Image (cartoon, rainbow, N blue to C red):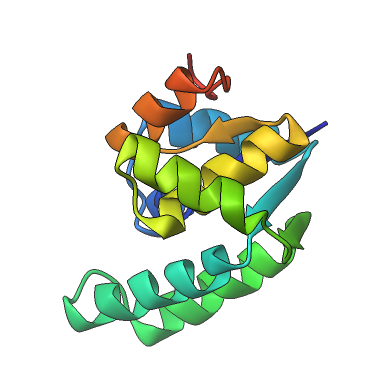
Length: 133
């Protein structure tokens, strides 16, 4: 089985933040594949660099985390359905970045792991199951 995970969950792992949804997703990734939109790659790395600038982690921590992340079964989906993604962003007042996760979850009929409140509300509104609900 696969599930969609957004950057907020992965960053909770990186910054050692304990959140029930992030813990559940971490446990599931041991036996399941993660599916992410292509924006995920950039979001994760940007947040890690921002974490370095704020003194939350070091460059070495970033390198170590990215190395461990590369060992996980992650599939990057590079072909979103643009019309649906934009419709979701407009309907739920999401960023296009967040709508990309929701569109992927809907299109592939996969559960979503996120810590973002607005994205959680939008997913529930679209009938998508959230990890941790």
